[in-house]
Length: 390
Image (cartoon, rainbow, N blue to C red; front, side, top):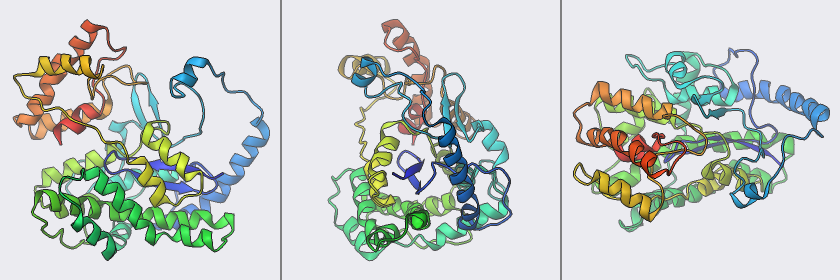
């Protein structure tokens, strides 16, 4: 069965599948600015490396399975290879070995910007190489070129009732984009397995390019009276085009979106959404269907304000036995993705009411969790900022 790479960004989750290897572990930096050319050079080498590794270690035992693991939803099982990121209990997420601060320092930025471009992290995840500015610029233009939505998807989104959850609309639109799948057509025509990755690449690039348009269209329909998302500007990066389509021109918001999309880009491969896409993709479903499957994670939110925080936290523990955004199955410290968003907010919007709310929760929740004995890790994860602030 083919193995898959996930480029996961919460509301904007991106799927890149490779028919023969989980990731491409590049050894040398490629000079080409065309990502497909780079992969065409790297994939055969990685296929050979994995084949040799399996021949040498294929019978090696890597762990034991307990009854608790089975009843616990496979927690703790070593069940897949995933090289693009790792979540360390003590230091948090690393993308291809790089911490978030290192990515902020190393990855290309927009002219005059301070935060990394998500295009750069995508290139890093897929190739294992820190990209050049030229490679990132090529990727921005390539996604801009592929961004247009087919008319039937636009019509469908315009006809959805306003009470349909935005994520339901999002996943339905992605499923409908399956009409554009190069892989589905090639597979039905009996394409050779060795060529799978080329069509999966085309689908994945098209999907990533179109997702901001889908998200912006839903946002405009629900919150801006169905106003137009406008046209894609091929001279702008992916995040800048997205914020323009949403209708926001504040440079700080665009910088925040670059940071937001970068740090939500990948999260190992065993969480619910990533695992769902692995599962569906393993049946040779195309990237549109695999990605749509991973999006079905609606989360209900409670209303909270400065006056009812303590009550809210304790009510959460009574009703659902957790406080959303706090604790983590792996991490045993404050999530670095939370920290970098907090630092951005402290620098650019320290007096924002919503940020003050999130900051106050940071002071209250860990103490309540420790008092109740409800969590091995009472500290905030990425969702404590992501889902409460934006």
